[in-house]
Length: 222
Image 1: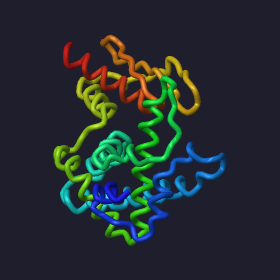
Image 2: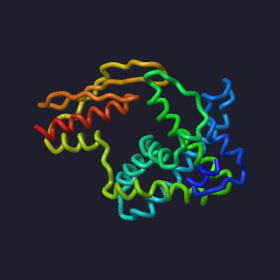
Image 3: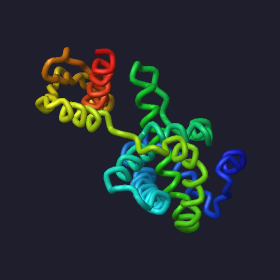
Image 4: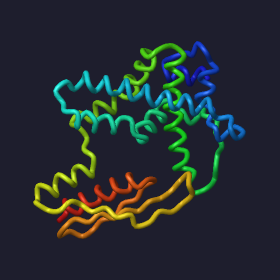
């Protein structure tokens, strides 16, 4: 655990907090994972607060919409996974390992949740400043690589459609399948005068974003 704390650039005063943040409910008997879930809940809010203030101060002239786009990009699961990889979280997480085809997707969710639980533990072990130092250190590369505000694919598609005087994009749920913990959604988006495009994701919202991204590719090659 000392090596992991070295990765964090922080040594816990209360090691039990770190242990709780690294023990996923899947490794415990039913009903005994509440400590992890509570830390995840707290860490999610701490990350949100720190990130919102950071963006507010770093981009003083940006609109609320652009700040929101940056915020969404920096707190999404994909970014949490990159941080989890940097600190080698998977090597110390206590969890149930599965061999099903959905294992990778579940592992990604688990590690993203674990990263939030860790932030919650850092906050409780000392104060907000400690959590903020951690977040600023490990999120700064992702903040810097997205200096132009990232644009949501659905927003980008909507803007293009409006600029062309076309009707709003129409999103249709084609199918939903898979187990409750790893569902798969397929959504089709239609735009007047263009071939429809499909996207998939673990939620309807993500499938719609993927479909919009595919439609933007259609537009780019049209």
